Image (cartoon, helix red, strand yellow):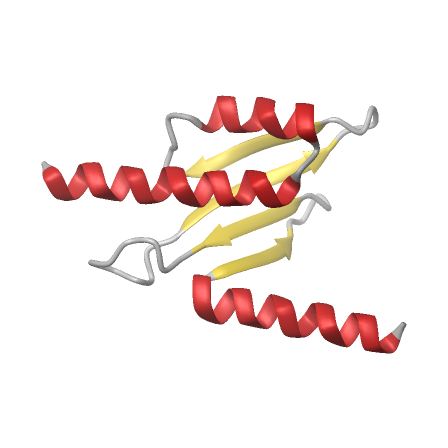
Length: 105
């Protein structure tokens, strides 16, 4: 068990260092997800959102800053698939697309 925990911590450290991905517990017990290293103009720019699991074990996604236009579709896909990794990858992809549109303007 200690080895598994150590491996998980190492993986989280790698994701935080390389991708700017971090997880924290919000005051109400929800999961706060933070993404950085998305915008090549400002690697510290971050996207934050909160994920809760309700009493019916359904995911609730809220408080996304900055707003990602496709977040409702990503949230629906998370609810259907329960694939949290795919959800986080989708959020990152959407953030990158938002940055690309900003850079074109």
